Length: 110
Length: 179
Image (cartoon, rainbow over all chains, first blue to last red; front, side, top):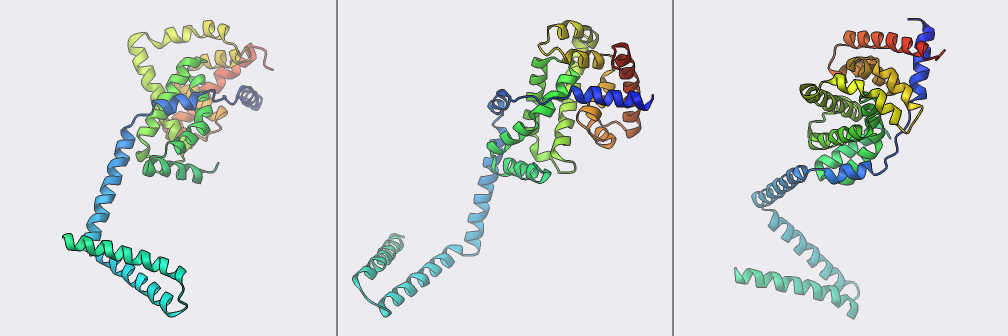
């Protein structure tokens, strides 16, 4: 086969190459997608949640978080009281007290 | 769009089941995939769209098996190729492909896109494998290695199909006044 033939075929094919407009095709595809993959994704999410909860329990994560929050709020209270005391600073302090109140109530129930 | 963004979109679909990411992939690849089927079916638009839909649905359900060994487009063509040849097999079992090929002239006469008639008539002179290799090579600008990866044929076989297909097409073009 000559180079001319090769060239002619290439030109012929390229001349008939055209982009096809979507015209709702992708919408039809999306409508027909099965939900199986969603189920797999949900299962994966559930596994991750269980794994995280287990790790949190094993490494005593709840206490670590509570201790951190406790220290943070204590520091905030201390800095509010020691720097400049005015009425507006009482609001965060009040929130902290409410938090500890609820926390205490929960522990008393247990 | 770069292959990296394809991978990012695939990851979004696999990990977060992000359908919008898959929609982006469909919009990006719908034209080449539908064009591939249009050439394989010699211009049967309805059938092409059905097969293209099946291709995207299979891609969606098997997306976790996309190992990024090839780019997403090549992987999609491989699915499209399998979908088409599954269809051919079931069709051959019932009616025989000869009937389908015999209908090309009737179909192209009714086709609204007049200048597309010649391409389908030209492609109808080729065997299925030759048509697949020729369209992937000339229309989709894929290398012989990639065609080999898509079709599962050895590179030598792809070259043989290309060579025979070119000869037949060259003959068709000469006969039809493409000088």
